[in-house]
Every structure is written in structure tokens, then in C-alpha cells.
Image 1 (tube, rainbow, N blue to C red):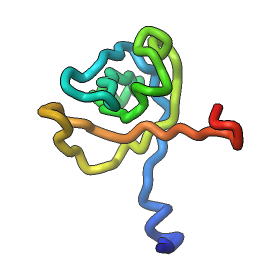
Image 2: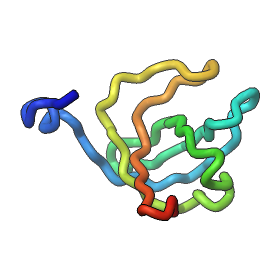
Image 3: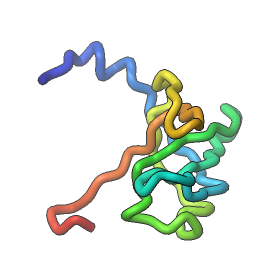
Image 4: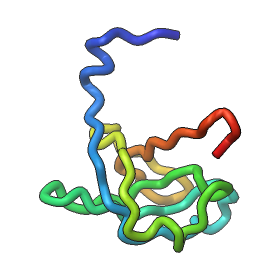
Length: 92
């Protein structure tokens, strides 16, 4: 499906620094990230990237997040945003 430019304009993309990352128990996909957004504060964000990244490799890295996504519960934890990642044609 398609979305309008007005819908896209509502999405707030913000760079954050991952300060902590840990495996979510009972999940083979999720990592729990503590992300510092500077003057905006710190948020907990769950990301389905466990197969791609080790938690210790993410510490002090920066990434782009959807900041104004409605919070939702995943595996008993509240996720307050969404991590955006991309892969090239080779899956890297």
C-alpha cells in the first residue's frame, strides 16, 4: 500500500546513541536497547535485530530511530520507538 506525503511528514526521525543493549529473555529476535537522545532524554526501544547484531557490538553506536511512534508492549517490555536499519543487496 502507499502513504501520502502528509503521513510521511508526521514521522519524526532522530539520531540516538545506544548506551545499553541486552537480550530479551524468551525471544530469539529481540534486543532491548537503552537509547540516549541528548536533550530529549533516554528511551527503551526493542528491536528485532538479535540475529544480526551482538548486544556488546551496539554499545556507543548511533542509529536513526522513529521517535514519535506510539509506545507498545513487546514480550512484557514497553518499546518507545523503532530502530531503522537497512541491508544492501548482499544482506550486509
